[in-house]
Structures are given as C-alpha cells and as structure tokens.
Image 1: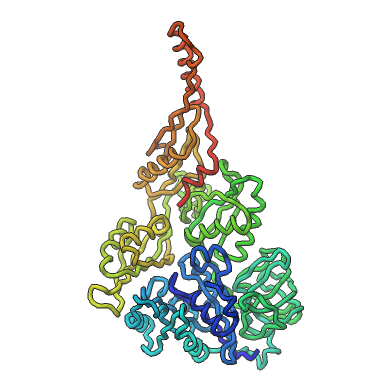
Image 2: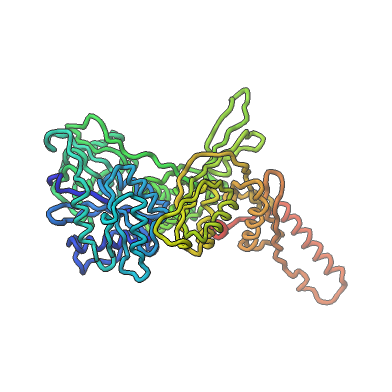
Amino acid sequence: MIANRIRNFCIVAHIDHGKSTLADRMLELTGTVAKRDLKEQTLDQMDIERERGITIKLAPVRMQWKEHTLHLIDTPGHVDFTYEVSRSLAAVEGAVLLVDATQGVQAQTIANLYLALGEDLTIIPAVNKIDLPAADVERTRVELVQLLGCAPEEVHFVSGKTGEGVAELLDAIVERVPPPAASSQPTAVSTALRAVIFDSVYDDYRGVIAYVRVVDGGVAKGDRLRLMAADAAIDALEVGSFFPSRTPLPSLGVGEIGYIVTGMKDIRAVRVGDTVTDRDHPASRSLPGYADVKPMVYAGIFPKRADDTERLRDGIEQLRLNDASLTFEPERSAALGVGFRCGFLGLLHLEVFQERLRREHGVDVIVTVPSVAYRVRSQKSEVSGQREEIVRSPQALPDPSHIESVEEPWVRTDIVTPEQYVGALMQLCQEKRGIYQTTEYLAGGLEGSRRAIVKYDLPLSAVLVDFYDRMKSASQGYASMNYELTGYRPADVRRLDILVAGEPVEALSGIVYEDEAASVGRRMVERLKGVIPRQQFEVRIQAALGGKIVASERIAPLRKDVTAKLYGGDVTRKMKLLEKQKKGKKQMRAGGHVDLPPEVYVSVLRR
C-alpha cells in the first residue's frame, strides 16, 4: 500500500450528535458493507452500546474511496470514555468535528476539539442532522467558525440519516487530511518495524489480538515479533484489517491500521501503548505510547457468590485488556470476602463495567460506595516522620488524631447552557462548594437565546453523585458538561461508619464532609431500615462519626404469641411467659448478629 494514498481520521463529537450514524452512511457510500447487511450503529459491536444508544468502545474500520484507503476510528462521546478518544486521536492525522444542528456546540464538542488540537490534527468541521425540522444550520455554523477560527465555507453540512453531504465530506477528508508521515528511511522495506498498540481484545482460542497503527516498516503473517516495553516474544499468527469485521490481509505497511493475532495467553504482557517491532531486526527505540490515565472514582467490587472469585479475577483482567483506563488491586472485606478495589473514570464507566462483567463473564457483583482518591498527610512523629499517602477507600482513612491534613481532587467544570439558565446553574454550583471562574458567551444567537459556557472549580466528589441530574433539572434538560482534573485542595472530611446491631458494616462506610455527616447518615439508615429483614430481636441501625452517633433507626422485632396455647387459668401464667420472652429478646439484642444478604448492599448502594 502506497502511504500517500492512505487517510487516517476519526469522528469526534458530543454524545448523541450522530457519530455512529454518520459512520453507517460512510460504510454504505464506500461499499464497505452491503446495504442489506447494514444496521443502525454498525460499528457498535456490544449489546449494551445498542441498548443505551451510546458508543463505549472505539471502533476502527477500513474503507475505499476514489482510489484512496480511508481508516476511520469511531469514538465515544461521553466524558467517562475520553481516554478512548485520546488513543484514537493519537493513531490518526485528521478529525471530523461533528455538531448537531439542533443542539449546537456542547461541552464535549469543546473538550474533544482541544484533544484533537493537542495531537496537531487537521480539523474538518461538519454540521449534522440538517434534515431535522428543528435544525438551526446557520447558527451552528457561526458557532463553529467562532470556535475554530475557520472560514464559513469550510464547514460541511451533512445528514447521517439521509446521506446528504456525506460524499462531499469524504472528498474533503481525502483532500485536506495529510497522508501518514513518511518514514525516516528512504524506503519502507529498509525501515525497522514500529507499530503502536492502541487497543486489544482477548479471544479464548487465538489469545490476545492487538489493534495496531504501523508507523515504520511493515508486518506480515508469520513474522517473529517482540513487544518492546514488556520484552515479550510473539509471532504474527495472522495480520489483517477491519471491514468492519476482522479480515486477514497478507501484510500491513506504513500508515495502515489493522490487527495482529499474537496467540499470547498472558493478558498482562500485551499493554496499550506498547511498541511492536521485529524480533530479528528490532528498532533502536520505542514509540512514545500513551500517557497513563488516572482514575477518578474508586469502588470495591465483590462477587455475590464466594466461589466466583476466580471468575471475577479473570473477567476483570480481560476487561482491563480491552479498557486501558481501568485499574484494580485485590481487597479483602470482613463482610463481603475477597474482591478488588477498582478505579474508574466516572460512574457511567463503573456501571458499564458492572454490566459487562455480568453479560460477558457471567459474574454478578456487589459494588461498594464509590469514593474518590484523597491525599492524606499524617502527623509528624519521631519514628516515621511525616508520611503522605493516597487513600482510595474509607477503611484506609487513618484515625483523625493521626491526620494533619486531607486533600481531595478538584475539577474544572465547563457547563454549556442557554443563557436564561445561568443563574440556576450558578446556584447549584455554589451549593456544591464550587468556586466561580468565568462565563463566556457563544456567538450565533439573538439576545436572550444565546448560549453560555459557565466555568466552575468543583470538588470531584460533588460532581459524581447527583450533580448531572440536578444540572439537567435546573436547565430543563438543555445544559451539558465536561470536566477535567486540576489538582488537590484541602478538605474537611471524615469517615462515616454504618453500624447494624452494634457491628460496623465495612461495605457501607463512606467518606463525607463533616458538616454533611448527619444528613448523609440519616438518609443511609432510613434506606437500610426499609431493606433489612426483621429479626427475632430489635435491630438498631446507626450512623457514627468517630465515637459519635449522628443518626439512628430501629427495626422492631418479630413477635411470636407465646400465650396462644393458654386457655383460662391464673393471669400470672401468662405474665411469666411474656416476661420470659422479653428476657430472651434482651439477651439476643445484646449478643445478636445480623447477616445482611447481598440484596441489601445492592439496593442501598444502587446509584
């Protein structure tokens, strides 16, 4: 394949702006997929993607258009899957920035644009859904011109549903997106192979299948290869590309995107960002790879059935291969047994992970209260000096008497909203301990119908719980948001313990602001009261902050009628039986233990 006949690009946009539908029309127009085989969201392979109507995984595909080979990578739009977008952008030379004509520029539109500019990509702006009656094409074009600083005629108008304007967009991709950078050597044959792994999947029969972008040299079936970072030897059992299903090819050359079947059974050896080179003629240095992603949310993942622990481990390792932003480490809980402390980029990421475990690996799990990572600085001592550690779970938070300071992660939040809702959204951010930064207005609307970008610094923990739902309510569904980590700031937080019958339940503990502990504790004990089964003795449910009880509820005991067998006689016989029952219940309350079924954790911790 001649490199200057190749164009590598991806489609980036805010969630639900029509990326996957536009990709369907491109597949149809280029003849990559026959019209009878096309279905909605062809590149979304997982059932959960189709059910939710969102893209979760990046999806590469190879197309032919007017004697050029086009490699498209379809990307997710949700902020929780930004790492998928960043890896896709690093594997291409151009990006189609897609904007819904009925909604205009949104928060993730801006965020993805900055990611693309950071990779120095050629940006092709396009307005989608122009066929809809509510489409405001001219206003959207003005917003894109203001955002990019481009000429108005450079903005393309397309309809992913009808196919209008898609052929012209493909022509623009061929004309404006540069071909892959030429190798440093005179010919591709004399250049040592260097291919970066941007994604991978696991097959029970074929081992790890690595998705690669060839930067230098070439790779063919049967080549003896080496992974440079892992220092592991592999063989190219098969090479090929995506049409959009994996299809074998004789070889892959410079600039091509495809896959290599490695046969590797050791999942941990093949890592995203590693460089593949020839084992006999290796490259002198590896490619830059990708920056390590830092999880924002941590939660304990435990199997509902104790004998599913090994299956859970295997499932997480396979998902980790396919999801480079996931982190995990073993964790043990007195209440839930052996499990894993996993790191995610957000709550949607956590929910998708939980659903994929259930569907793809047959493991039902219990998820503990999600928390962020706190930076804790201990009191200085003569023995150990002063230590600083990252605390990811409530159980790891030291006693307050040993803590000098606690810092929590903060994020810079961009909220795009019609200007009439700015006041309500600013009030919401203030309630969430936000610090106001600035408000900017987008051009293209009349006075009173313009849209604003409200920028706030917020604690990450405030954004993760119910912020999104309240933001949608405050803006009648029109606002959208994006956030990125900015650093750590001091926080006045404590561990809130939940006690059932006097025994702390680790899985229900959480880290809360001290001034909100009472209200949070009250909500927890009220929810628990509704789901814990009644016992033969009175059960007290308490929320404790250190040694202080801040909220309490009681579950009345089951009561058996011990006097049912009596008939007539002296009343003292009845009183003796009731007194005996009362004494027995008192003894059970003093030493009784309540076994909480997994359903209790699931119902209480369900977000």
